[in-house]
Image (tube, rainbow, N blue to C red; front, side):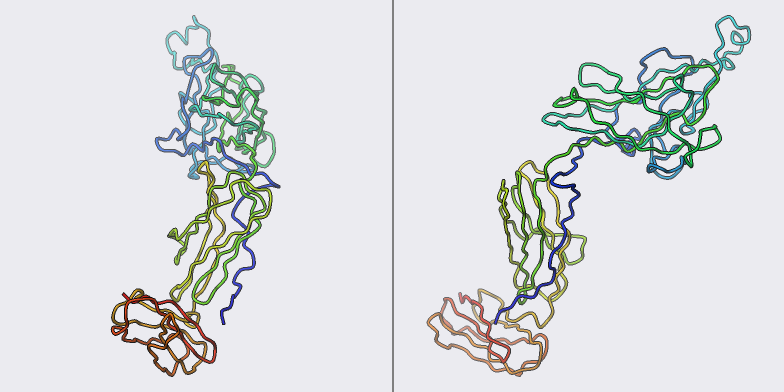
Length: 420
C-alpha cells in the first residue's frame, strides 16, 4: 500500500512584505563599486557656485566608513562613503577646512598665498542617470551625518528630472556620537533619512540625484562636514504572488512538492530546483502559474525514484517581466527502506536489476508479468532490512511492456518495464 509521510507542514516563503505590498528597489548606491566611485555614481565634484582657491571637495573612500544608523563615525571598517574633505589636507573623512578669508592686497597673502587659501565652496556630487519610466510612489532613503557652521557650512539634497537641477531639501544637522553636541572632538553619528520623491521625478527616462556642499571661509566650523552612504530609491508594489505556504511530502522513494497561493499578479511560472549540498541547485521541472488570480490556487510537482540521501528543494516564482523570488529550502531524507521498488535499466534487453527496501527482514517474491497478467518470471528472496538487490535474465522475453511486482508481508508494489 502506498503512503504519504508529511515532512514539513508549512514553510514560510523567503519574501519581505508588509500586508499585500512589497518594497521594490528602483535604484541604489553604496559607493563600494569598482573604480572607487560606486557603480551608479556619476560626477564626483561639479561646481555650482562661487569657489575659492582651495575649496573643499567630495571624496569616496573608507576614511569615513559608511555604517548603520546610530553608529559613531569611524574609518577603515571596509565600507566606503561619499563625504566632504579638504583640498589642502586631503581625504581625512568627513572633516573640512574652515580657513580664514584674506582679501586681495593683503601683504602676507601676496607673498605667501598658501597661508591665505580661500576655501569658499559650492559644489555638488551627482549620481549617474537612471530611469523611472512607468514608476510612481517612490521614496529615497539613506544614512548620513552633517554639521559644520549652521547655514554657513551646509549640505543639501538635489534632483534632476532631465531638464536641470533643482534644490530638493536642506538636510538637517545631525547629532554626534552618543547623541550629544558636535564639538569638533567627537565623531559624527550616522542618522537615517527618508523622503517621498516628488511627482516630477515619476515616469522619467533620465533622473539624477545629487548632494551639495557649500561653506564660506570665515574660519568657523565644526566637524563633521558631511557624509552619506547606502542610498536606496524604492517603490511600494503589490506582491506578484501572495504565498500561503509550501511543503514537501515523501512518497515511497520520491518527493511530492505542494504549494498554494492566495493571489497572483503577472505570475508566469514556478521553477522547481533541487540540491544535495545546499550550494548548487539544478532545475528539475516547471509548473505553469495562473498568471492573474484573486482566488486560492494549488500546485504540485513529483520528483520520484530518488537515491538514498538528503535533498533540498526550493521553488522559484518567475514573473512575466523577469522578476523572481524563492521559497525557503524544503528538506527531504530518503532512507534505504524508502526505496520500495526500482528496476534498471529500463528499457532493457537482456538483464534487469531490481532494487527494493525493507524496514525489517521478510521473504520477498519478485515477479515479471505480461500486460495480460501472465506470470513470465519469478524469483524468491530472503529479504534483509534495508536495501536488497536481485538480477533477472529477461533476454528470452519478447519486446513489449511488462510489469515487475514485489510481494512481501509489508505489501505489494509494482512498476512498469519495457523490453526492447
